[in-house]
Structure formats: structure tokens, C-alpha cells
Image 1 (cartoon, rainbow, N blue to C red):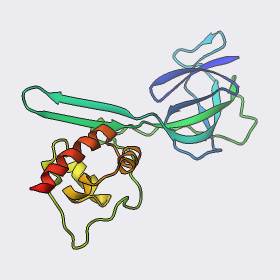
Image 2 (cartoon, helix red, strand yellow):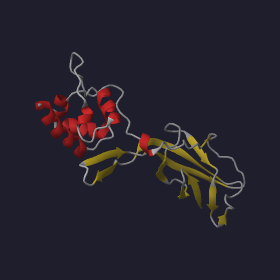
Image 3 (cartoon, rainbow, N blue to C red):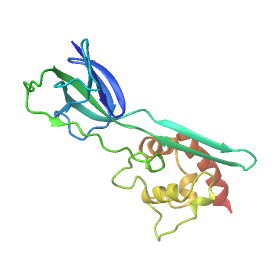
Image 4 (cartoon, one colour):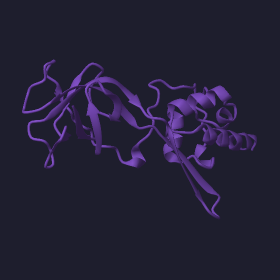
Length: 204
């Protein structure tokens, strides 16, 4: 028997033991959640939901989607901006499809609650808890916003990770670029462009 559930603004056709990712749900691996917004069970179609139907699932892990790059370039203004985003996801495994108000046979599941999505402008990759780099001794700091593509928000994020001078950015190795790409909302191509610009600014 299959069912169609609604979660995170999307619809999914599911059967028992299906394993897939959906929009982030609160909870930890091993927690059970229940979906009460069931649009269809077998040949029974809801209006809009099927009365007494529910689907339970186990959270397998909290994960994230692939990085999506947004690139904007303005004509005749020599201006461009690149942003990276990785969507928060939850991998689940369907446990049971219940009808007629039946209770789950496993541990009582927690209600599925979907957190309100953040506005696109505020959505960024999670950064490490401790700075990835060591800031220069003596508190030396350059105005990183002079580098095209680095705005006040990006400058603050870089400063928090110990990157405060042109010389530091110019000296980034390919391994450093890959590490920043993996842990911060900046693409490798974007960081390499900053590295080239920082090298010129550091000479001034």
C-alpha cells in the first residue's frame, strides 16, 4: 500500500521502508515523526486529507543538500556577486502507513513540525565553531570590502574566521580555498578571484 504525504510544501509518494530526504525536520537520528497531512492512501483520495490516516517515519540523519551557486553580474558597472547555499535536509525511512485512526505499533512518534524557512538573504552555510585561521598578531586589519565581491556581511564572516588582511587572502593555498568552500557560503572560484585582487591590494 502506498500513500501521498505533504511536508515542507512538497508532496511525496511513499511506501513502507522508503528512504529519502525532505525539508529539514527537528529531531535527532532515531527519532520517530508522524505525518498527518496524508493526501491519498491507496485508492482513497482525501478532501484534502484522508480522515484518520497517518504515516510514521524514522529520522535516519540530519544532512544538507549540494551547494548551489548564485551568480549575479551587472552590465557596465563592473559588479558581480556570488553566493553559495546548501539546503538543510532530513533523511527519513518510512515505518508505517496507518488508516482508520490506528496507533503506531512502534514507540509513540513525535509530531512532525517543519521550521519556518529563513529568508533567502539570511540563509548561509554553517561556519565552524572555532576560527579556521589565526588573525595576525597585533590586531592588524584591512578593509576587505575594497575587494570586489566582498560586502560588509562577507567581511564580518571572514573576520570571524581569522581572515582580516589582504596578505592573508593573497597567501591562501588551494587547500585553504577548498576548506573555505566546504565550510563557508563562498565558492572556490569566488575565493580565487578574491585571492588575485588581494595580491594586488597587498602591494599598495
